[in-house]
Image 1 (cartoon, one colour):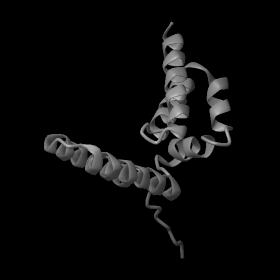
Image 2 (cartoon, one colour):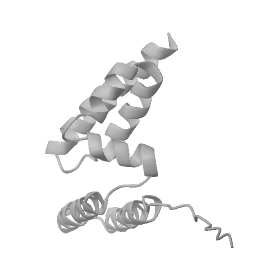
Image 3 (cartoon, helix red, strand yellow):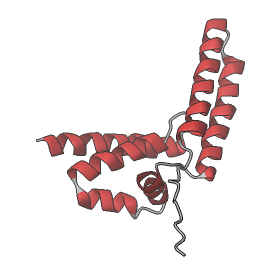
Image 4 (cartoon, one colour):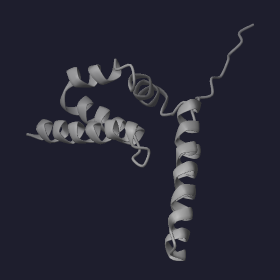
Amino acid sequence: MKNLHYKIIGIISLIVGIIGAFLPLLPTTCFVLLSAWCFAKSSPEWHARLLNNKLFGQTIRDWETHRCISAKGKIMAISSMLIFGTASFIFIESNILRISLIALLCIGIYSVHHFSKQRFKKQSVRIEH
């Protein structure tokens, strides 16, 4: 039963992620990563299919291996946030909503920039004489 819940959540988040690939207002990566995590828990076959997917596979492998998003992915995410955030800012008349939008954009940009940095473990080199 638990596997079924993970599978359903994985399917829903994958659908939302696919829609987000075509609608710039929806994020894609976070939903695809969520679906990969759910499929890893519920269906190794579906997880493997996502890993081998031409569109999403590399992003998922990078995240699962290094816990990072590629530089290209970061640039795309931040660019789309700025473009659509600016467009929203122009059309919003309420100052409270504008301030909220700016705050959310700052949080989003900080999150993409900070939390997706690739972390390398320091390797000590031992030289024997």
